[in-house]
Length: 167
Image (cartoon, rainbow, N blue to C red; front, top):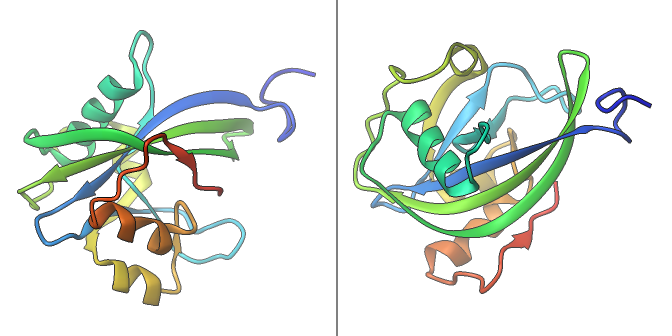
């Protein structure tokens, strides 16, 4: 069976994502242009994406934050979560093997000027969310338990080792 031909045999896509907080404790999320395939509702993701050739996870998350937000003064902290998720993209099954990094910024103005063509098409809007807003929303968030997972980070409780968030 050819890699990418099924959910059971996906192509692994190492990825790095940022849990980017502003000074008010809000997290930056992007609404994906397409609706969630399971629920038909809007869904929101953190800044980030796949590693480029020769890039490690830390370099990838730094690059992705600049590309997707235009913010250069971002403090990238430790990797706090991991997540694996299989999905179909252009008739190819991928498994995103994600690492989530804690990140902070003092600026909240987002620029699209560094985005790739794919990012311009895929990211419909951005928003700085509070945990309460996430918890009250009927939209879908990635990871699904985002409202439950963020409070310890905001309280300064950083896990000794990254843990799996589930889907």
